[in-house]
Image (cartoon, rainbow, N blue to C red; front, side, top):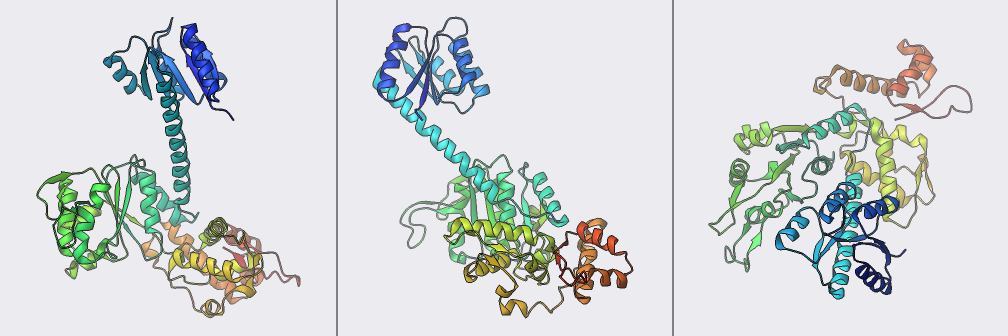
Amino acid sequence: MAVKILVVDDEPNILRSLKGVLEDEGYETVLASSGEAALEELKKEPPDVMLLDIWLPGMDGLEVLQRIKASHPTLPVIIISGHGTIETAVRATRMGAFDFVEKPLSLERVLVSIHNALQVSRLEADNLIWRQKAEKRYRITGQSPAIVRLREFIERAAPSNATVLITGENGTGKELAARSIHFLSPRKHRPLVEVNCAAIPEELIESELFGHEKGAFTGAQERRRGKFDLADGGTLFLDEIGDMSLKTQAKILRILQEQTFERVGGSRTIRVDVRIVAATNKDLPQEIKAGRFRQDLYFRLNVIPIHVPPLRERLEDIPLLVEDFLDELSRESAMGRKAIAPEVYPLLSRYAWPGNVRELKNFVERLVIMTPSRRIGLKDLPEDFLRHLDHDLPRSDPFQYPTLKEARHHFERQYLLQKLKEYDWNVSLTAQHIGLERTHLHRKMKTLGLRLSPSDDDGNDRQAPLP
């Protein structure tokens, strides 16, 4: 499809001249001799670029520009004028004009400006697609009460500039929570810079965080910007902050208080605007008692505490997570989309998943790679996985849940899974022994997210729940 350019000018000679040149270059050209006519053309089909004269009969070009930016903010508008002044050019630029070209027009200059406008427009469109994909990719999957509550916490915390401390076991998705906070915040168009505090050697972490001057230490052959500098205006994610040394903790505390720092080997104070999101799998109050973490830094970080629950406390989310992983794997490999049979899900919910969501993702990838058929069934489950299924899931502490509804939900789900297992997934027999009507048990299982697989052929109502 040809690039469409709308030219707005009240001089017929300029319209004819631009039309001829632009069409020779392969552009589709639409002409308008007034601001009102230009706005009518916009209603029909927006162009890719617009050339707009300032001095027009009736509505002048700046008023037209203001209206265009209100209705089509991403449309690049190049202002052309025979009475241009610096003041007019500055005003047009502030209103959103892409460029300002003076008359008499240099056709080469006009073509270069159009080319640049199209390039920037394409980059912005690609950027928008990338951001939308990134936001979708980092959306937290799940419908369990714990995950619904986590998303609500993130949505409330994200718009602020407050420091966030994310806690949770390894593999639960703390990085995902941090990225969700950034993409839902006003800083989402600015950098998100990540630092794994546990992966950087102690002697290098200050240089990594704050940068260094040339000659600050052996091997520092040039000045280098640190992570705080790179994250200016955006978000700095300090992962595994519980592994940071006390010396570095003191410097982090100062930055949180003053938003200033000096590079290693330097004396110039650098001011930044950075939001801190930190994460740890450690019990920081216990680390404070052991003298390994500063109490004052903990209070600074813990402005908004967010806890990411382990997978064993949100087993009903397993089918949704598995489907996401299958989609992701099919996009990243040439093996195509594989499916997991419904009867596999009850077994997945009977495993404790000590490695949490990360372990589940690795497990699904293993199944996809090692299963030759398009459908992954019970026969494809690894023996080492099946050996662990006879162990009971760890009992969760009911007092950890903030509401009675969540505590009851998790207790009832765990209780019914255990009883159904005891009676070989026979719903009628289970209902009889726990004192419920069979139909009531069916409704309860549905409420708890335990979907039923088709009944066995023998009609004994033995139905394994699908989380």
